[in-house]
Length: 263
Ligand code: ATP
Ligand code: MG
Image 1: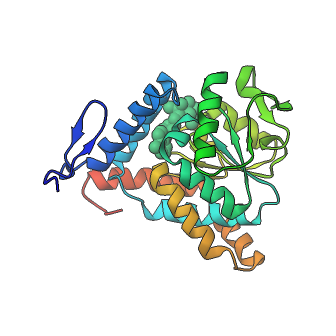
Image 2: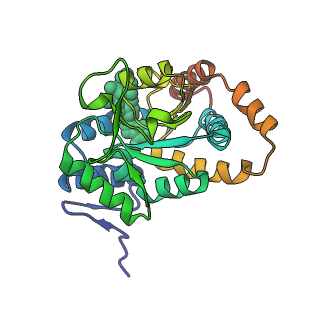
């Protein structure tokens, strides 16, 4: 057995004893995803912004994130037509978990890329297929509908997916698209480590946590709430206040670094 317990990646070895092993492992996964054509360069930059906030939050799930996960799970279970929107970062970090969540919810998966190319869509489709997804939307050769208020490839959505969804889970979404989706009266759930981002502020429910922790937590919450009656689920969604939750997340960051409170 190797006493260093290192993971081997194309360019480096990270010792498991490193205090930030998990974070460094994710960083390497993202670089690897870029090299495999899953991510555009900007996907790595977006990851870096997320990583900075994760560092500030202590790289663990806060009680606020747990509360948001409960509300998100309740909203997704109540949805008539839930859709999970997948971008390069999501496909790189949690492909198996996304497919499991979609299966458990009977939700559609739609590929939506900020920097959309036919090649990248096809690579991501293959990754999701390998993870067990059957009917992936947002690919080419498909009827598209344009989202009002957006231009270019970002405006495009699948007619069988985001366009007709009542509840959309869009991790790591950009602010403009989030605003446009909310204007279409969709209940928008996002996962975003930056509680100050436009997306975080625009969504109805924002899970301020790393996607690698948030999706498994969502799977668990969906499992736990699945047989609970609808009126209780509605209550959970109604009781959730996104603005308050974001303010508490910001406070957690400052308290943590002035030594006042633990997560
Ligand atoms: P705005 O929402 O203000 O328009 P933006 O969406 O354009 O900002 P980007 O950097 O493109 O900003 O979006 C990436 C977002 O995803 C950032 O807010 C970042 O914190 C978040 N993010 C990146 N990696 C992760 C991750 N692994 N888990 C959760 N969130 C992440
Ligand atoms: Mg955003």
